[in-house]
Image 1 (cartoon, rainbow, N blue to C red):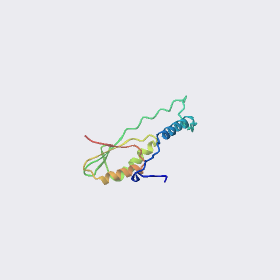
Image 2: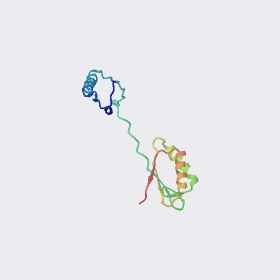
Image 3: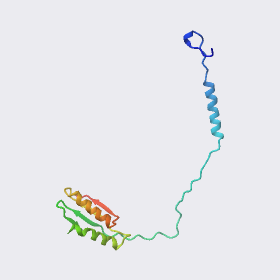
Image 4: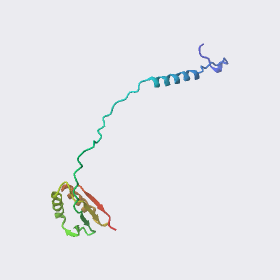
Length: 138
């Protein structure tokens, strides 16, 4: 019988695989060193040096301070305004210079209605205001 087990009392013959593993590792290293490395070129568009300096940026207009108090009153630069006029005022500011819009700084009271803030943000989006920030009062 080609295979024998220890239970029959015969000698156990196992193959020593250590020399086989050594030969395989040496062959693997030889193939890794001699195999040509494949390289794929990657096109990278780097910025080129320009002779002309970039145009000077315009100074941004002063920010618009929009405050919402706990009673639901909306203040545009410390002047109370009805909610229906806010979007029109935002559109006027955007249409002055669409590329250089003022920053809309929104300050809300901790007790202000979130729905009112959501309406103000919706008006700002509809007026296409791009610079909106939130201010925390001290």
